[in-house]
Amino acid sequence: MTASTESELAFVGPAALAAMVRAGEVRPRELVELCLKRIERLDPSLNAFRATLPDEALRAADALEAKLGADGGERLLLAGVPIAVKDDTPLAGQATTFGSRSPARSAPADAEPVRRLRAAGAIPLGITRVPELMAWPWTASDAGGVTRNPWDPSRTPGGSSGGSAAAVAAGLVPAATGSDGAGSIRIPAACCGLVGMKPTRGRVSTQPAAELWLGLATYGALARTVADSALLVDVVAGSLEGDRDRLEPPPVSFRHAAASEPGRLRVAVSRRVPPGVIARLAADQRLAFERAARLLAELGHDVQEAHPAYGAAALEVTLTYLRALAEQREQLADPTAVGRATRQLAAAGRVVVPVPVRGLLRARRPRTARRILALWDEYDVLLTPGLSETALPAEGAQRRSGPVALERAARFTPWTPLFNLTGQPAVALPAGIGSDGLPLSVQLVGRPGAEATLYSLAAQIEAARPWAGRRPPLS
Image (cartoon, rainbow, N blue to C red; front, side, top):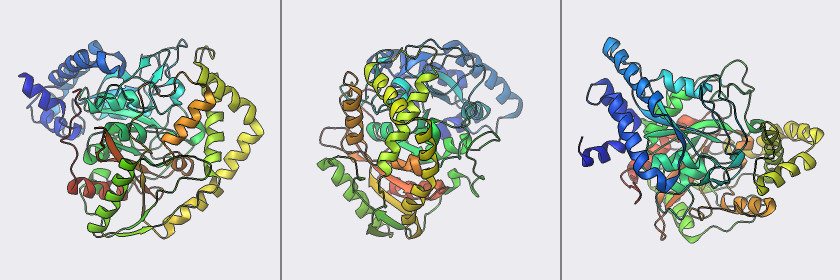
């Protein structure tokens, strides 16, 4: 392949790449070698990967090619597609460090989403950076250094799936896994101009864990287009016995939904900041939100201003987050191997949210969810801004105290965490480029189990305002 051909191929999405592999137009080994070459060239400037797995990936590519030669691999939806795996997701034979300096044992088996990706023909190529214990909306730590945004290396790719987002946005891999406990898929997607779906709680198995972050978090993926995001969630979706939360399979695939018209939807639009959070919406993000609302009306949807009854949900999220962080830290072999801010907030979680309060928070959650979900009795989808501003400086508040870092995180991303508490599906979509040259974003939120509605509407928005052709300068 010529350099120009390699550059073009690097930005072909997972669905099209798999089709090319199945048709014999490109070999799995060629795709793995292309991604490894791009990682070698670009990752020193991005720091998206904690580790790469060249030997393992090349062996998997050769084994897949033999399988394709035997049966054509028609059922392999991700045949030969290199992927990156976030460093909170067990990958067989590899350490999962959660972004800390603590020693970590190799995982005995893949997490269920990784197992499903492999079964669909995907080839894990490396492990992406995360902030300590996935606690922050920037990806910087003492253990891993600073991960940078390919749109502007002085800015963060977001967090906690920041390494995954940087790798996909820069064309190092076609797709990557992520997880979302307070926006950790949607925030990096918004920072890097990607599509990031947080599935409904219970849509994707959390095995080998029964749940993640006291039920706040779910696994998912990052991609450049709506159709590719839908494909990836189709592949990883499915709950198992042993998962605390379980959902029935959807009636149609998300790929089908993304290729279908949504019909006329009732869309609530709200940029109201949840009570208890102090945040100011930057001018560029406000204009992106307003443009998206106008576009939805132009597309024929019934668009009205309406607001969820948030109440004190932001406080509930914060307390649950603090307790989850404390429990995550205690699972480390060396709980002291984290930075000041993480250590301070984990300690606060243990003191402020003792076991009885933890139980009260869990018991209160369904009532809070019912109150917020009342909006979806009248509307199909909620539109909010994605973030309050474009990507923060790359270091975020890494060197600040825990309370200061927490306050900075809350101001940056006031609209994502509440829907982890309710368990609703929510997707971050690109919404143009700001005056600083960085991606803008909006968020669509559906009722529980309604990923199909979100994918159908998101694809309609994408068709009206295409974004996938934009590439960051560092690519």
